[in-house]
Amino acid sequence: MNIRCPNSSDYKVIAELNRLTFEGENEAQLVEYVRHSDRYIPELELVADLDGTVVGHILFSYIDLVGQEHLQVLGLAPIAVLPGFQRRGIGSLLVRMGLKAAEAREELMVIVLGHPQFYSRFGFEPTVAYGIESPFPVPNEVFMVKLLKNYQGAYRGKVVYPPAFNQV
Ligand SMILES: CC(C)(COP(=O)(O)OP(=O)(O)OC[C@H]1O[C@@H](n2cnc3c(N)ncnc32)[C@H](O)[C@@H]1OP(=O)(O)O)[C@@H](O)C(=O)NCCC(=O)NCCS
Image (tube, rainbow, N blue to C red):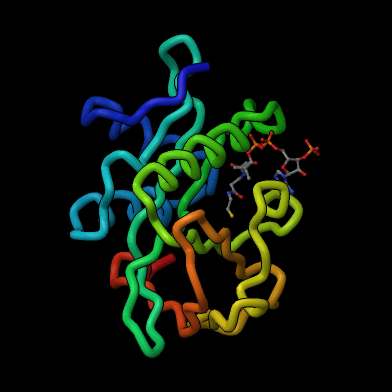
């Protein structure tokens, strides 16, 4: 299993992977919108390449944390592993490699909306514990943050997603 950054020749396959995994267009479109925005970070888009076939994909991009300060933090979305390849550790590998790349960039934190059972194993915790508010009403346990080594002090505030996220 090779975890690597995609190149433009992978983009069609990545879109198809997101369509198949999420059974719809929204996530594939989100990836396209983010890539064409100033929130895109090329080294934080990764694919899982199994003998030349892309079977998994993850994207971290900049979102805002607005409080006393206005910070750019990372949002993890989307992550997808092809249905036939799930529960083999591929999703976990994508998250771990992505977090490592985020640490290398000295980012502050990663926000995710997702399954607590999946994300807690990487150190994600409900944001409420840190005074970080979700922009929409969701159960506390599904809106999570992973604090990175560069996080210092308290960065409280409300998460604001850029327009690319409007339709997901
Ligand atoms: C979520 C996803 C990326 C995980 O990738 P994966 O390769 O299957 O994950 P791993 O094999 O590394 O880890 C599997 C673990 O994640 C958890 N998990 C995976 N999918 C889950 C789900 N839908 N609900 C709850 N837990 C889930 C399980 O606890 C599982 O642990 P187990 O194998 O000990 O039972 C993948 O299942 C997927 O693409 N799902 C559909 C799309 C999706 O829901 N994306 C995430 C949006 S937040």
